Length: 227
Ligand code: DC
Image (cartoon, rainbow, N blue to C red):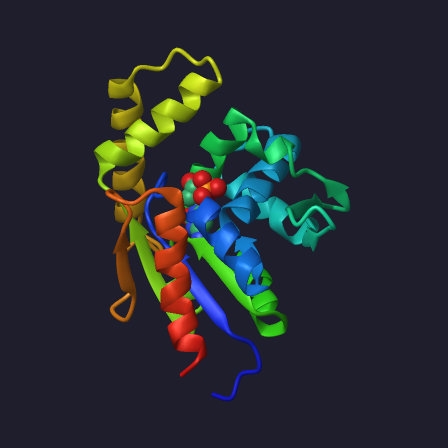
């Protein structure tokens, strides 16, 4: 296939640092960073607004034909999410939206509905796209595929430190348990479960700091770009 644009797929479990690392690498390469989790979060936001029971599969499916989701990159370099024209970029980070995003992302009709939205960005831009199924389902022909992970203990420690900074009282043990449960759900769902694509390069960031992780990813991408 003769494609005009270069695409990088980064998948991995929650808390591996995908979004921070991908955003920094994209800025340095001049690529567009696509946070696909934000797109699932936007569907969750729509369900919260429009469904009497937002965790009911049938009611979520029913709203899909009527919602319009757009990605918009403004001068701040942030990927803004528009739901029916309204900027919901902050709203999608609320805890109730996070919880529901994991529920709606397991609905096959939702995943199908979002496929074109994600693929269209890669057809028109050089992208680094992060998620759970980018290298396996969304962009199976991506030029570079990276599976970014770290041990559950390291990921939980990073998340716990973030929460401490926000003066949250969650214990490390609670954060670790939550991380392990999310891993299990992401890896065992029926549709598009999280797994390393056969042709993905595995990068374990357990022993790397942020700068070292970004350099490792950039090195892999730049090597492929110069081939
Ligand atoms: O990465 P995140 O926490 O913003 O993702 C929100 C939810 O969407 C999370 O529960 C996993 C799901 N997701 C997915 O199923 N597939 C993707 N490509 C990206 C996210």
